[in-house]
Each structure stands twice: as structure tokens, then as C-alpha cells.
Length: 218
Image (cartoon, rainbow, N blue to C red; front, top):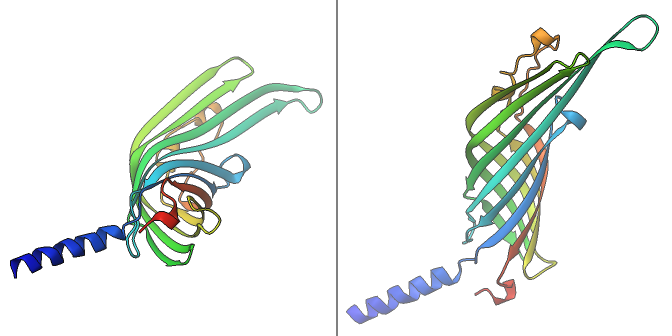
């Protein structure tokens, strides 16, 4: 009886682990809508790994870089003639964050419908650079730690390759870089303070690569 129990346990372990997907690496580019930034967008680049997959869950871990820039300018002039004074202000933020998600999916053949609730933690830096025609230069910097969630709904397609997967996502970004950007104050330089809030939606595209071809996976 004891031998039968050991054999059954070994068979169960083999059956479960044999269905685990092998890890894959991915790169992702996301663009988010926000009218406060140049071209009404800010950006995120991500590199990470889908650690494995089993049934309807595929946990993933990644590192991301955010960047957004808002350029402003101001001119004073007489009624006629060239400007007598010019001032420029560039405000930007960048963030380095880690993320973990228990990505959930429903799969038919080579197509997955995925839901990605992801927890992030990391740091952001907001910087403002002022320069005017009188050669007055001023720089202000704010740094903060950030903890937040993002949510993505998308489709991942692997029919076109045995190793590569292509993902397309609609994303809600929970990062509010305004907590740092709104601390930059250039009112004394005649630039009114913007009320930044970068919680917004965006679109993402991902390319994943699995070093073991899918037709070889047990």
C-alpha cells in the first residue's frame, strides 16, 4: 500500500509540473493619454518575465521606466517689434518601478484573453528647468517613493510563431506622478502651477519570447 501511495504521488507531481509552461521574456511599450504633456502623452518601457503558466494563471515580474515631458514658453513684447523677454520651462518626470502580477487568462488554441492586475513599487523623480533671455537659470527636483496598482485587459497571440507571442492591451495606469510634479513651484517666474494627475488609460504592445518552442512543451 505504501509503495502504491508513493507511485501515485510521483505520478501526480509529474502530471502537474509537466503542464507548467516554461518561462518567457518580454519587452513592452505603453503610451498613456494626458493633455498636460507634450503631444498629450507620456511613455513607459517595460522588460520582464512570465515566470510560468498553469491552467488559467501566468505570474509575471518586470521592471519599468516612465517618462513624460511638458514644455512651456512665455514671451513679452511691445505692440510692434520682436519679443523683449522670453522664458522657457521644461517639467518632466521619470520613474523606475518594479511590478508583479498573477496574470489571469483564458486560452483557445494560440489565443489568450488576459486580465493583468499588477502591483508596482519604486521611485519617481520630477524635475523643472527654467531659463529666460536674461540668462537666469533655475532647476528644481523632487523625488518620491511610489506604490500603486495598474490593470490591463488584452489579447496575446502566439499562432504566428512557435516561440514568440504578441500582446495588445488596454491599460489603466494607477501611477500619479503629480504627487511629485505638483511640488515644483515656478510661480515666482510667472509660470502658474499645473495640477498634474497621471492616473489615466493607455495602450500597450508586447513581444514575448519563449526559448522552448510550444510544440515541444508537454
